[in-house]
Amino acid sequence: MAYKDHIIQEGKESTETVMLYTLSTCIWCRKTKKLLTELELGYSYVDVDLLEEDDQGEVMSEVEKHNPTSSFPTLVINDGEKVILGFEEAEIRDLK
Amino acid sequence: MDGKVVDTESIRKYYERLKADNIARGYYLNPDDEFTLDLIEGLLVNEKRYGYPACPCRLAKGSREKDLDIICPCDYRDGDLIDYGMCYCALYVSKKIINGEQKIGPIPDRRKEDVVRSKMEDEKCEKLKLSHPVLRCKVCGYLCAREEAPETCPICGADKDRFELFI
Image (cartoon, rainbow over all chains, first blue to last red; front, side, top):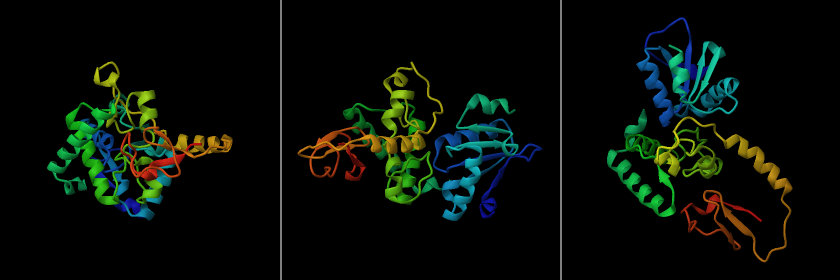
């Protein structure tokens, strides 16, 4: 899928896959990224608003699978084993 | 991020204007200056990108018609202020939050729920025989009975296209 070329890896890769769907303009998304970095949890992210329309469509159908309201940020652990919607600080800290 | 396209001075100015406007209208901006300035940066990035300040925490489609309901202040602000004491992105907050009686945190996006509900309401609503149609500002709820919506809402300043036929 084309949008996958735009996924950025932050921090070290781990056995868990931590995928974060974000908007570049969204303050809660930025807070989530910052917290993951602070916790030293490696993660991948894609800023959906910066993608071309076709790629946006692809990535949104992926987001919808895990989060029917397709809100941001959507944090997906191990392809859906755990999904955290929004900047739920305590839940994100528990990932550590 | 590409937020650097907006300079600090523009962000500050927008903030000051928004603050003054909202004090006059009885709305409160998030008192955390740093947070609010970051939010406004997102709004201004969207204004440059799309031509209107779409909510920075929602994915805009890029056409005014499709994004009308999420142009800040969005159609959902007042409902969210009532239910959660803050709007979806937390630019607007209630007096309770200002006074520290309620906390800021993530809230669900009521956008999708509202689309479903408004369709149901449309079906239920029967046309009354009125001398003028009643138009409603979807941002602040202002009602006026006239043939056409005003260019700008006299209460909240929203543009004409934010009005809907109410009765």
